Length: 577
Picture 1: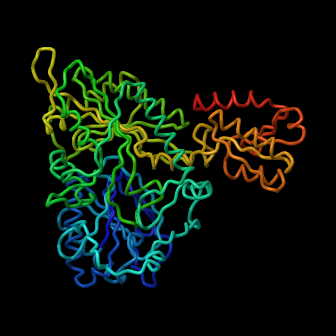
Picture 2: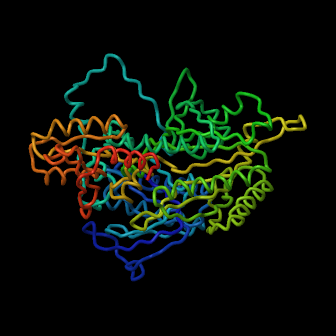
Picture 3: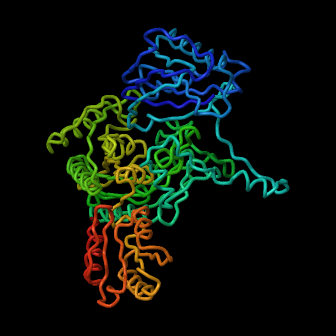
């Protein structure tokens, strides 16, 4: 059995039509739209392996749901049959039995539960919460344990057929039939930005064009953080499980961790960068004169997800998190958070995003002293109120180690995405015994302020591609300018223009194919290239260029001096307009 749990602000669903010959009968209430507020949504795919003991499968599902409810603090459950999680589905009778029995058992345990109808195509809408445990996936086996990942060793004398293996890893084609026209996966394919392959499920293969976007976003982030006094660090990908047990992440993410063995030691592929960064802090004694100490990492992290929930750049297994931490004294907290609010606002406005803010308070399952939670929550609230920032109170949705301010982006389609976060943490410094020497010569405990702005470079890139429909600003565009020749006889002059553009540091290419200018212009428009330079007989004679900006309504300008264009586009790129 495979499950996806989503802790949501709400879930709405409504049956539309039959998906199997004999779906369950619906009551009048079940035929209409049902909305459940603040539930833990349990999306379930019952599998063939569950058919041998459906009763036991139901029992194990109940145990896992209760465990997830305890970890997230959820009070309600929505049971939702979701066949997309598996390709090894059980027969419908077994699936329905497991779901109905699970519903009965949960109700006996005094848990409020709503089960979505079985055997129907349904429309559904939900808003997922932004905390780290809001989205989890699990595989449940009938040996009464949630399946653990194990390291498989390939022996030297294994026999295999390379040609057969090659067929198995051949790149699958993107099914665009159910995707919207501006879906980032379609844009990514059309612009040759990235691809996916089953040899690395949920991990992005960045092509040259896509890596340019990735690197430009990273460099923008680096520049802003350098200017704001951050040091950049890098921590290992694989670290001992002891580290994660100290931090508390081991228990919180156990089912979503990748583990491996080394000399009888259990190691973990890092799901986040915080604990590794803490070890850097502990490497040398710290003085109050060094605080606030601002440290940032573009950390590559891994979180195990079921293949059925992976969705392009939006939900992946491997992603880059712009994880930053501020170590400071208590009297420095407000000023540091205030600066962070300004930095987040600057970055989001640069990309044309509107956003709203939520203040998420202590969850039911948490670590740390209650008085420190009171202090942390009141501090975040006070900073927001002082800056006259509008915010929504999201009670019980904070991180297990501290309350947080979450930033929800609004994209061009009206969807919201939780990307940025600021988390105030008194607990981790205590668990790791972090100290600094104060002006009094005594040891004191620093406070940690966790923050991320992109959240995930992969998801942020996907949101940005859809928000702009691929029409990225010039500084982010893989190709910033294309040079075309009006006829073959103009090619040498066009090549000279291309060379000058490249020498000026502009990402330029050329189209010297023997086709019409109209065809070349249409191709450049399809590739979303910001500027198109044409060289014909008049341009060659007058040593000018014909210049056209991206967009069907943009008219070409003639008699433009190349030096003037280079000056203008260089300034546009420098200013990241």
